[in-house]
Image (tube, rainbow, N blue to C red; front, top):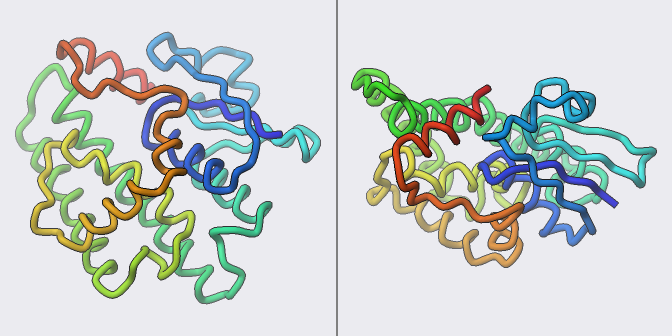
Length: 223
């Protein structure tokens, strides 16, 4: 049995999507980011970085894994799915996984912060991170021109990237001209495991009623 400590963020969704695809039984422990539960001592014993997600694998002597990419690799290797053993294909999956972790996540995350959460609208910062995020989307779009999925077949690279890209409007972006990327988003959105995964632990209300509410959520994710 897997214990999943998570919240309703793109990084959290990565793991719940994979667990749903794998049909592995798991318990969900929702972490309230606004209440800073991720910074409490008991949680820091599991995840010293004080972020989500984290898993505890009770079938492997209560082994703890934190960092979303590391969790995806661990679960894929454990199950033997979505992370091919062929060295070249496996490397391709890792490359696109790292592309998300080192590029899409950080850049789009900053786009969210400056476009949605920052108390002061700094136009330079907004445009800088929106433009870089769109550039990275364009790289994905090119890769998907001749590939159904990022590494050819469905893999943890797609599961890591999709939860971020699906939030393009939240970053203030439009992707109408990125036809391959839109096709990929739509195909994955029809998969039951992806649909279930983004309901864990609960669905985020993206129509935040006030700017203060949005800033609270954004700040809690960053600290």
